[in-house]
Image 1: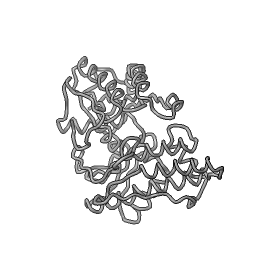
Image 2: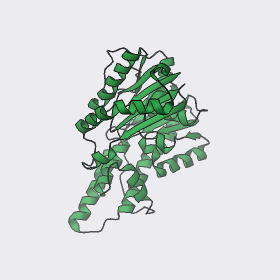
Image 3: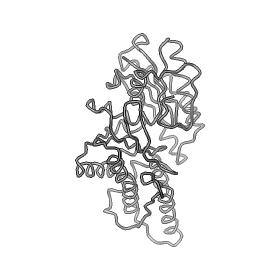
Image 4: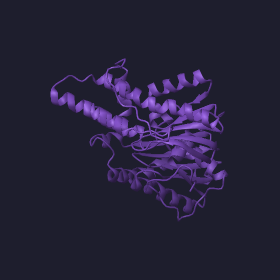
Length: 337
């Protein structure tokens, strides 16, 4: 089964063709990162307009690279939530028009389910059940993946997402947007242990996280150094910040896996590309005797292939929609539609 998949939840327009949920035939992406870097973050209205400009040509590219015509496509999958509402609407509207014109099923896909499903493309042997750590710019969740379309949240951030926190900290340190990769590179220049940063706990919810205090601490340290003329060890702060984020994520993921009775952990999302967090996850899983799956870097960021992968399993579960399907800025991962 060949699925044409669309992703436009933030600042990447992505169109892919995926076969049987496991094989990437094409994965075309148009990034807006350089443009939004001028503003230090994503400008929603600008992102929406760029999606409009890119999506038709990108669809033709994805079909061409897959060696497909419209007659080869069996269904259309699309991110319908969550994300920047204008951006999501562009991809959804285009996907609905393709579904209607080509008379093929329309499959709604939750964006975070897609990040988890990126692992299905990289690891054909991976099957539910397993514990997933979904860490991206807009979402930070610990999810019990009971089946391909049966997911249950065990823990989540109470405020900022880990990826958002990385971007804000990077901006304070004078690094370009998006901040994940520059922060990773800068952090490798220090052994850390210089700055004491907060580690939050949520009373009564041991698996929940909070990153707002950590973000504020980095901002205050940078402002204090600027106002007093004291030196700021940027590499050490980047390293200590990264470790603080990892300390929020990794132990909770391990605890959640134990509580859920899972011995397999998968990570997904842009923050899963961070080399320190990947290393900490690997070490923790090795110590506990758990199996770890983390997709290659190209599948950690937003892409259409992950939407096609999850779309296949949503289709098998009967989760299709009509032209009345709407877009949502927020949506629980447990809900298929």
